[in-house]
Length: 315
Image 1 (cartoon, rainbow, N blue to C red):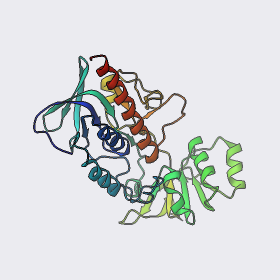
Image 2 (image 1 turned 30 degrees about the horizontal axis):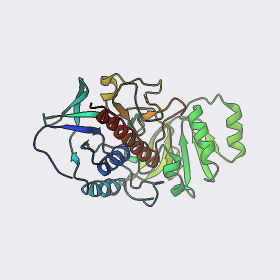
Image 3 (image 1 turned 45 degrees about the horizontal axis):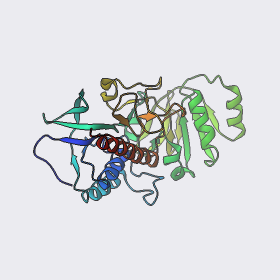
């Protein structure tokens, strides 16, 4: 892995150094494709203590997983990594020019967006401090570790009810706290109660969290405390970058970038991988790192094949 002091044109420019971007860079490095990996280190899981579900790396802290991937990338001389944010992008003929935070620019024949999504947390005191530490959104990533604890699910909509139902399979002590929301789905509510899930519909003021981000209790408006050790909720999300919109990529109603089976967006030459994108056949984007890594590798293979075809035709 080397650093070029001047602006140059790369086969691929990757924006985002999470699992998708790192996986793509590794695949491209192994095929000797000149690749620029741009990363501002603002990943969605940066507050988490551990990452889970990634084969042979289960439980590794996200920062360590990232550091390990970057160290391994140094073996590939065609991959350059710059710890810089991208401030803009535009298409020029058959290339994409990206503007970087230090005032420089770089050009790529292909562009991979791996900029992720951002969780839009509700204004609940204590939630920000607990997020990623004892308050989570993904049961596949974080529920196993709290299976023997008292867990609360926050919310009263269909997503929260389904999340509570899913967790009730292997967590024996769950309380659904709607925060004053009225639950209209009486069928699911009755099923939850039959499975031992307690339901609290009164409003609450805050989460009581210690100085290490560990949840201690939900505090209701009358100061009553519900002791608990973890919370799950499904906050809305938004794109982690404005680049998909700037480029004119089509988005689904949930804000996800539309891609096909090959991670291609609706803009020619622009690919997207990770939780920012999904296919039309999926109802929601996958948020696990193993899925992001797989999508990044697939995008890299398809980009390499596209470039190979252009080169064979003299392009």
